[in-house]
Image 1 (tube, rainbow, N blue to C red):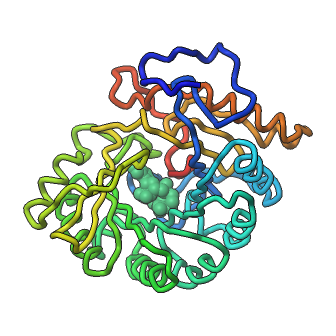
Image 2 (image 1 turned 180 degrees about the horizontal axis):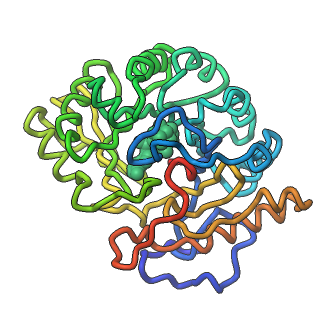
Amino acid sequence: MTVIDLGVPSLGPADPVPADGPLIDTFGRIATDLRVSLTDRCNLRCTYCMPADGLDWLAGEQLLTPDELTRLLTVAVTKLGITSVRFTGGEPLVAKNLEDIVAATAALRPRPEITLTTNGIGLAKRAAKLKQAGLDRINVSLDTVDAARFSRITRRDRLPDVLAGLQAAKAAGLDPVKVNAVLDPVTGLQDAVELLRFCVDNGYQLRIIEQMPLDADHQWQRDRAIGADDVLSALRRHFELTPDSAPRGSAPAELWRVDGNRGVVGIIASVSHAFCSACDRTRLTADGQVRNCLFARQETDLRHLMRTGAGDDALEAAWRAAMWAKAAGHGINDPGFVQPDRPMSAIGG
Ligand code: SAM
Ligand code: SF4
């Protein structure tokens, strides 16, 4: 199959779904990167993600069991060509068996790259065990290094736990440790400068992510969210940034070298410079739904299929069909954009 430019698909969702080969959509994009949400629960309440009172959590029987999850990971890696698996949530460290899940994933062949996105709470105690289980790399979310602003953004007073988690991740050899930051509309530019200084000083790689309309409260406003161009201008007033020469590939971050070789910062302009044409992701929620995009409005229920006796071939076919139907882009900038029903915490970022 030829990889074609987005916007002019030669095939449509009505064409037959490929029965084998890579996990491809009608635009020729191939998904090799699986994002797995392990839980919708979280111990923070970040304003851009969760409501203050939390959500109606998924009930235990709605969650994939460890065996069901391992089965789907096996299908993904051995039949669908997934080469990298990122565990996320909700807060994935809330899953007490995370080390076992990582170890089971590391035992798959071909072994996928295994990464984790976490808020870092509880990481100080678990980073070394996760590394030992097979975790390759980690992203720790931190939006400010100011304790008062951290409490306001996350609605919890836990900055020291996150900082301890970061240190433990580095000590465990999870290299590079990346810091994910979503900027507050009011203090975000100041936070970005302080975060970059902190990351450069401590040997972490900062990734600044544009805030997307995925908050449970549906409060996102385009004109309030800080855009990548404004972030770059603010950073340039304090640091010398030069474009990183490494090829970007499907990576969402545009990378910049900081003050020569002191560090690297990535800007993820998901809204202002969308990179959907290079998307290589497929997503699995904690309740076993495949989503072909963060912003998808439809899901494919693999948990139901498994619990009604489907074989691996049927799971593979359903997953392929889900991805075949992937839209050209997230549509945030379209006039008729409708935010998905699930917030970020229930999808898995
Ligand atoms: N709890 C973990 C954490 O915060 O890293 C993992 C799940 S969280 C949903 C994954 C990532 O999504 C985090 O880096 C978070 O900052 C980001 N995120 C959450 N809501 C977002 C939004 N509305 N727009 C952009 N990124 C968001
Ligand atoms: Fe929790 Fe992560 Fe959402 Fe913050 S961004 S509320 S840490 S899931």
